[in-house]
Length: 308
Image (cartoon, rainbow, N blue to C red; front, side, top):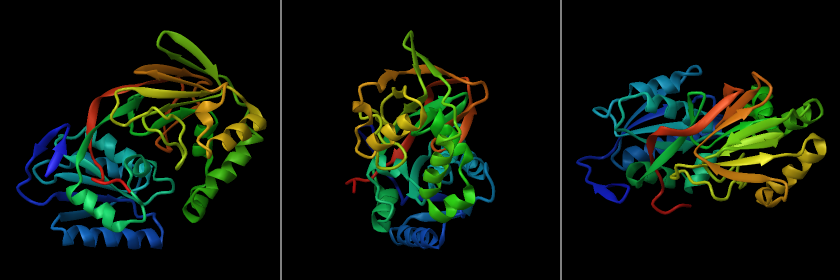
């Protein structure tokens, strides 16, 4: 059975799954993917798996997926792979749900829905018969995002991170790049226009989910199901400011800092140095100035029946 917004739809057969896989994952993650696919088939799902070879492939595969052939598109990779799949889905024929096999560095979407990246049984069971929730997307300069869109230091870190180091060390690559950027970044002013007001800071993140960069809560009131953005604006600059926020975030105290502003909005404009990067779901998706809003499209996301 598939549950959608308090309605229950009977499924005549097991779910037909198109698994879009980013093959850059390491050996351990490839083994986990194979384990999940084997479990899906054992649960009766009809599985078709395709590999991406370059940026844009996941989006193209998702755009071409028809509800006549598939019930579920499974993004197997990190949050960047999910982002590509979602952008393909909103331009596709519709009628297909989204599921995830988390194989990335942070797996923030998995955290949001209570999916354990190391629990192959839970992942497979969720894809096979988990309930479906309606998720509101954000859109930045025409590019959709699921989790967040940010301008400032975090976007520069995302743009500058060494991909080879990221594949080898995971989150450590972001730590290395953050330290590197902290001593060379000039922390220019970022302006957010929302709700008829103007807010100033050095970094701004429009959040659709609570978590940021891993199991760290940046926007406690953000919800995937909500047609609202929770915008976190950080005003302090320099190494001292970065350290202050860097220490508060792992303790889930970032939004409690007196100078940090968190506002709710359906749309906004983020201004800053023209052409500066805007990261969305951990990849660069746009450049400033950026118009960010709740997208008119929604996505049906399969979540665990009992979050881990």
